[in-house]
Image (cartoon, rainbow, N blue to C red; front, side, top):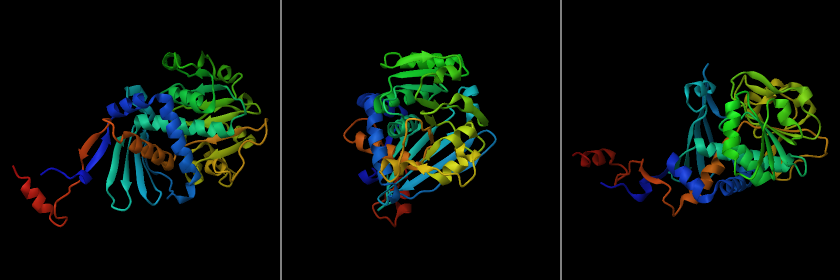
Length: 347
């Protein structure tokens, strides 16, 4: 028995995702994701919201990130295992699903390791466009791992950055990032220290992977008038920004109940004031108010961003060869006769 069309779920493999990205173009893909993310941030209040459901271990974390806008449901499975890098494995892997709320039937299953890197970068750039100093052209990229190229190109495509200053404790990572960005149109400078990297930069992006309290940016490193894009937190016990910087700056977050657990603000009192970035993007709150202000995006990633990315992919694969119809759902002719469907499949 052949499954019905309703029982076939579009599945986007890693190979198909890469083909789709190249078909659209990396910069256009990032711009498209940014548009969907900004649209969903502006209707933030329509979504179910909950901190991600996390299973922590000494080695890392495995999480589920669900949300729904009442018409469509989405979730992402994602892990974060910093030790994997030493074993030749990705520190983060992911897949995601989109479903129709009315029937409960899945309408998309896709890899999200590649897609998460893109949506994270697009989110960073959307926020930087709203919060960074006017005319910001230079970004320091501290941590040159798997996210660094995506962050750099997104800042170029969406926020107007033209120069990236790279630093990583591993010079091989910096060399990798610089080589991958060759031909991007960005001016790329490899730096020997974090202090050197932030010299002249208006946007400071930190993206490191150790599962530990760390201070990538110390108080004396950060002057007035910069935007900090802190994207390397994401779990209890892991930080990158000195508390003194957090207290000097204005902090913007995705969803406070999650960020207070996983973000850099876990170092602060539970009642320390923060602004939700959706409020800025929808015009309900102020972002940057002065040239001397330090703005900090304490980003940990939130399910609505993944929902936006899943929506974008669902819309863009229609009519393309960049997916497999996956026989994922049992769909008997008579919904009450699942056992009969099994019998008829006997060889």
